[in-house]
Length: 278
Image (cartoon, rainbow, N blue to C red; front, side, top):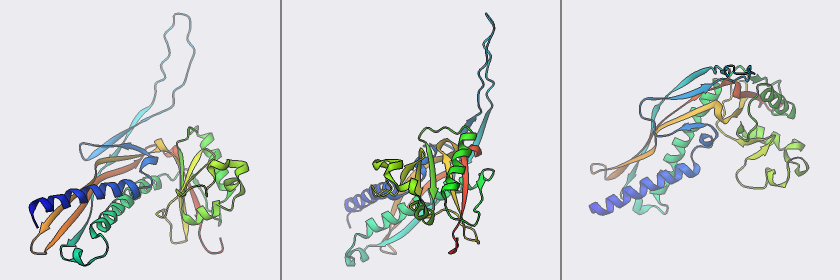
């Protein structure tokens, strides 16, 4: 194997991993606040409180809002996903082992990104809708919708609700969720392959990684984009090295990321019972 061929292999592999991560990696990264290219072991997200408008007298001083400023520190963690590619095994396979390993590594890191965001969402416990021995119901959705309104959470198209696949199936039984008379033809859940749809100004997304406890209670999360922060010091990077003693390349995919809860008021936890008789 000449040096030039080896370098071409490495460059192509790095490109494939990056493309795979962007295509099939994290479902949730674009639904939260994100800081990229962080220098250091942590990132800081600013949180600003509500302002109040007041009057002033003629020639008087303009009143200040005295906004409450605070910040949330997110600690970055390093993650790795590696595997071996045997040089002669590649000659015996009908599939491109390089692409398989690239996709697997990118998917593993994408799932880890979602795990970090989900862990941050789990820290929001003050706004919780009890399971009530039921799955996902219209009543729970409307209760959460009211809670957002009472908390003045912006209805600006940046709300997201991630649910388990069982809850997604239950949503598909709710007339208002699937009927074009309510949501219009463009927002029907069967109109595309993305398996996500807008409802009540919120993008509903099914996800297979939501936490479930020993009693089969699944936690779903409805949140505003600004309520959770995700920081990245390094997106997916790939290091490919040749090991002559193994006659194989070792492929190491790695990233440095973290996530944290910024504003608990912007997150509602909807608990749903997944037991067979629920």
